[in-house]
Length: 263
Image (cartoon, rainbow, N blue to C red; front, side, top):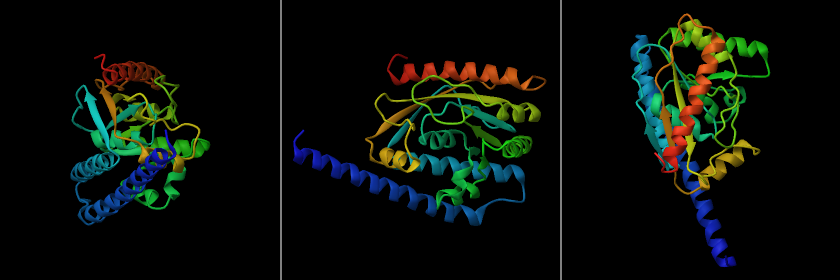
């Protein structure tokens, strides 16, 4: 690659970064301004439905700004009371991918709450924050998840606790399953697989660098494989946890086969 070609490539990459980052911030602020005055607080079900519709629209719009196409394998069950969506975790994009399909409230790392712009938006849409290094925070989060599930909400969880490269599904943290069993809420298992070479994985870098790299990346595709709901009533949390991890592992393999053109 010549110096001139390399320079031209760098300019295009930087332009994508600026355009997508600015576009996503402007989009979020504009949609929040339209959403907040019309929140329905008098009837719980109406409030959940309205917020979920807004969250799905917002997340889908942000993914379009970043030129990420979502390909769904399987059927997304309609919300009929509280449910927990459990997925593997590979990228910051996972948040938008899951929210665009299921709506609901995301369980997220606690430090995001203090980030300018993003933290305020996350709070406004009801994100549940957890500090995994703090046992007290973990218990508070379990109670918060259980309450939301009992109220009929969707709670979205990445129980691996952090992001990993590759398709291996790592050990799940148990807290989410304690909450789901306590609320007797079904679990919807999900497997995500990004196109090979997409660079979506968030590993060994700062969050800022990760976002900048994604913003500069060419268009990409993510496959979302959705499984049948897993019942939790009258079951032990550790058994539900093991079954869910096995099912997510199976769904990741299905998503990878679809992504690679083998299914």
